[in-house]
Amino acid sequence: MASETNDAPRTLGDLALEVRSKNAGPFWMTLEAFMPDEETYRIADALITTELISELYHVAPASLQIFRIPDLHVVKVSFPRPVVQGSLHDRDMHAGQHHVPLANVVVPSPQGPGRVPVAGGPRRRAGRRWSGR
Figure 1 (spheres, rainbow, N blue to C red):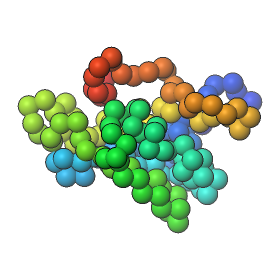
Figure 2 (figure 1 turned 30 degrees about the vertical axis):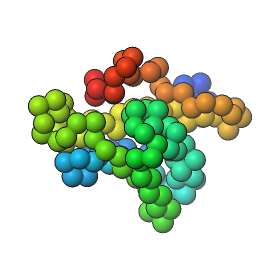
Figure 3 (figure 1 turned 135 degrees about the vertical axis):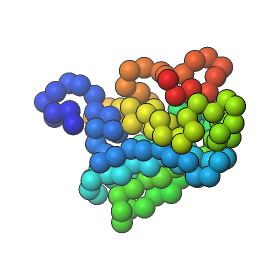
């Protein structure tokens, strides 16, 4: 985790116990952010929105399902896979690498409102879905 005195941005991945992705059947995938305590859960809960996931993964907001589980300090997001699992164009059969854009989302400092930046800049190519590179 980045030090409080360090100017380096903190990402969701820095705060979380684990950020992971996995299949939710052959047509859906799930992202999960496991947070260590109530304070970091509140940060993740505010950060993980329909708008953020839609922008990061190029998914229609209406197709997203967000599950907030405060007792377990977990935020879970499910949405349709860009391609069917195991199909010719599937580059990540187990959907195990799709967590990276979410883990790289920078947690805004408490002093500054505004748009949530992503560490390392945008990871998408114009006109294409995130390809897991």
